[in-house]
Length: 380
Image (cartoon, rainbow, N blue to C red; front, side, top):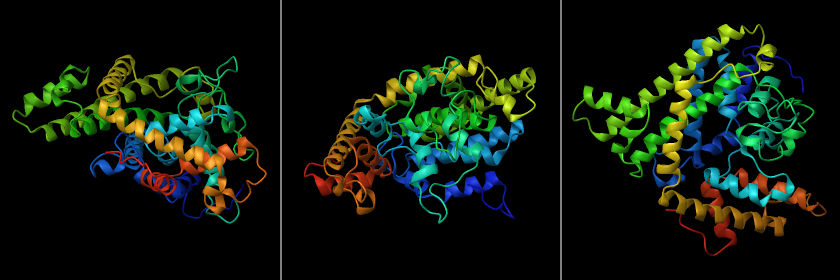
């Protein structure tokens, strides 16, 4: 809905501030990134990941001359819809809701900013600008291809989530075409942040041997350079130096390729950016190969490490148990969540249970499980 303009902030600055002050944003501090939140104070949480994404995104936006506030707003909101226990919680809820449109954290972020946050007297959600909502929905690229079918790494093998297929009237985001250049920056900053901080956390946890970095493209060259310049450096500082240089190298690659594309495409407006046949913000061929190689290394060495998988499996059981309990008896949820469900159909109950669970922090999910069950895992 239309609101009076702020006397002190642009619309995008207000978007950013509303996201920062939202309940969903605060909850990110106790949501898993890779390691569950109580494993150690120095591992990334979903919140610290989000802040790192925002910092990288602002740096890229500033260097290219984009709107930093819109870029930051999209970056800060991009993971609001994540469940407790990281991607495991999302995967479990997606399976549980297979007959009711599935679950997708990107779509859940949109539900939060348009419906689920209830902090304002005049509207549900955060009443963000259309550009911010578009960025949240489409920062990873078009939702459908020229043939009208869902596309991209997230939706190519599944129907679009309901809120993306039928966006709310207040946020009519078309599924085709790219989002703004600012949203594209937020997406690529997410990739860079993952590459860097998961190397840091994986080695800190002792699950990724520091010496193994020597064999990873880009990382290995930077690793060798740091060791050459600083012989005898302890592993903690060594990895920190390498991670810092990984971020710098990938950002430099994005800047070079994006400037090249801007010069070639010469878009004169944001709408022309949206209508391009390719993203305007991207890795070059070398940077894309390095990004893929780092992700493949982390997938094998960290994300599928037996210790991480064991905790994921137990966390998945927690989410499954909660979903089954709340859909079997909606009154097991707080009154505000179940008051209007007496005559609701199964799909409505399922989505409400998913909304409730997705908003939980790791520790609250465990607390709710202990309230309802006698076999809550320790997750350590």
